[in-house]
Image (tube, rainbow, N blue to C red):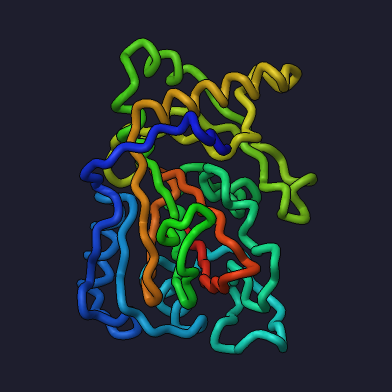
Length: 287
């Protein structure tokens, strides 16, 4: 969901975006360092490891060793026009690797929580410990506003804490219907999953919001789509009016991790006719 000019921009010291494992390569870390990475991720919501030099298969192997085998996607067909170093079974390439003028990740330029595999996977809650990794191979010089290329994040645990007591109590009674994203080919046949707006984190036990994306529908409003839309827009606006935004400014070699169960994010548009962007994305549920 894009709130445009109404969105509140505040500079603040966020718990999000902490740099970890300085001077380490993800291809050669100890089990203790893997545990420290996950501990930092649950604590901070968004962490970054800088100055990496990886190929796609190495990122995938790191994910398996660190989080487990429950990864979404799979069976990706290799594109002969793209370097094999950028391709692997579970890796998705975002950007314009073949100089496309319509970036592949354009759908992610509105606020959302990634949930590509969660509605489709039996037995997984919507607030499962779904970790998304994004590795910057090629970074545009600037976004369409002339600012450094970035991805924005908002802390949904802080968002809940910043609500007044009456709003917290109201939201704790409401459940949302979550659908698979429309870009997933089997989305139409995937049953909705119902999940409370107020969610308790599985590790920290802190309460936060789980909003999904702007097509999410409150339970009981399935036949009142206009009312559902207005409800969600009002809730999003309330969150953005009370919760500052963290912007991660990308550098090539960054690997950023976020805990989807407590973070909402969006990419910032860039001029794909002018700049090339290549980012490798991988999502995995911590087992």
